[in-house]
Length: 118
Ligand SMILES: Nc1nc2c(c(=O)[nH]1)N=C([C@H](O)[C@H](O)COP(=O)(O)OP(=O)(O)OP(=O)(O)O)CN2
Ligand SMILES: [Zn+2]
Image 1: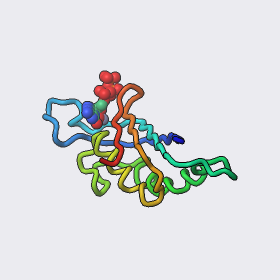
Image 2: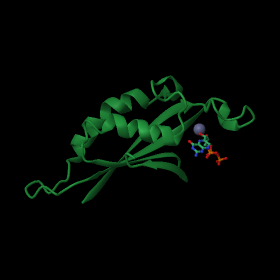
Image 3: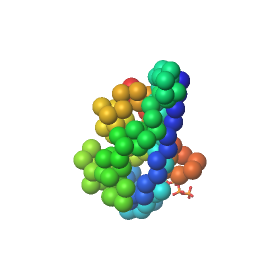
């Protein structure tokens, strides 16, 4: 069974490795949406794969590091593309969420990066 929980945060970033003529070379902001997908068996008693409240609690420390921050200043996100943010979130969230199977990072409603840990 798969479950997905979405989180939303605001952050600034710039992409240091695109040409200076690229608009994303300049500092700007996004309203990010993060989808955390967890996969595992349904507990026969609770009916949950994982309680959504527990997912929220486990993800809260990472939200603290991202929400209303300049992502380039976050260790490991010096080049904060959606792809790198997806990997960063997966790697940092996995220890607290062992059933984490996929992370999607939406920079806009119509563009996202997806990472499954490989
Ligand atoms: N493969 C990727 N391509 C781009 C990424 C990325 O992370 N991975 N990031 C960007 C920039 O962050 C850019 O700000 C993205 O904005 P954009 O898709 O252009 O969307 P906007 O809403 O800001 O602009 P519109 O003019 O409305 O399309 C670029 N590429
Ligand atoms: Zn951007």
